[in-house]
Length: 330
Image (cartoon, rainbow, N blue to C red):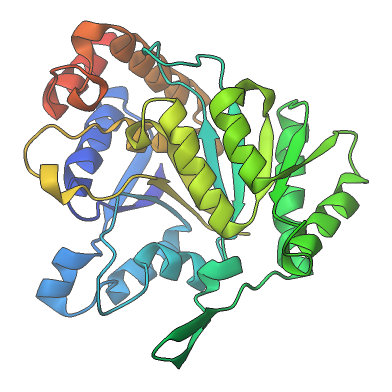
């Protein structure tokens, strides 16, 4: 039995986390969830967005499933997600971008995996106010952190038989920072038999909406990765359909990429697919590949039928009805 920290989060987080638990229970997956709480609701009760109990659970279990957490506005952390990534050096943000079902999409052959460097770039949050009319944000790129994310992308491509790795930068303009990231990518590529593609981020955005099937594994910096992964989500049905994981050397936090959606919280209409697919990534990484494949197959079968789709995909099913349909398939 594997103990996994479960952080339901805010907004629709508790609803979709409950859905995952229901599916795991039905499959009798050998996972014991240790539930701890973080986010805006916890702050109102305890005065802390991330209580010590969360850190203790993460450090004991080293693996977690996390629902969406609302980023505080005007006080607190810039982002609780960023705080956890920095604290535990979760430098790999991995987001598979592939349709989970037969949906009315423009492209049905998208199958890329995006590796986003997770700890530096503009997301380091190094800013200074020069005057009332001027502020600076410092872009930080280092050779060491660039090398490890590029290496992770190439190792993944090697392990899973992927055909190419594309590195995305704006090195023609930001020659020092993006130029460094690109140089490191070229150096790492020399140790592999997989071809490296070089593409500028603006062209990448255009190519993704015109010919997305040409991309296999993609590696990029923090800000570009955030934007491009959301663009990729739009290709496959929206943020409710894309899983993700933040990985470090000895810890992994699997999460739904989408936000907490407070406008639909407690209405029973949230789509738990993204968190379910993230849970499938978790299952694979702990050796439960059969369970992961069964869940993915059930999701594919249910959402491919227009009569059994959630509301965000043009259907009518509530969260509970969708989970019931999945359980029937399982």
